[in-house]
Image (cartoon, rainbow, N blue to C red; front, side, top):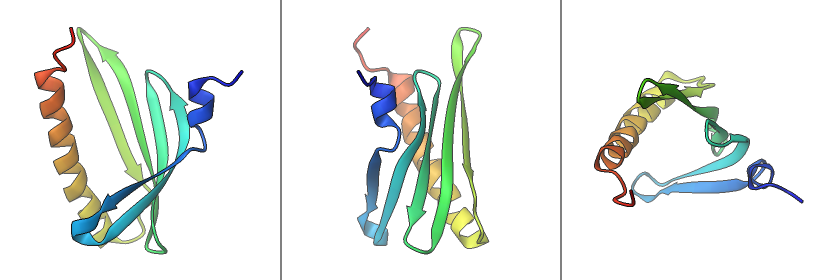
Length: 102
């Protein structure tokens, strides 16, 4: 029997950023619930990078560690930094509000 973690590894998904005309192709590399997730972040022949999230207990909360590595062009890094700032800001808002399912 295959666990959900095992079936997640090698899974593919895409993020479509229509306003920028981009499709980001991803493949799950590591899935270790509840603490770790890593995946590829590939845009055509332009960008081939890796994203890694790790959750660590810290006091009464959780520290989220994030790394996006493998950039060969500074412009691509600047674009990704801008996008992640927006996405992580939205995630922070959601986490602060909670799901309401307590």
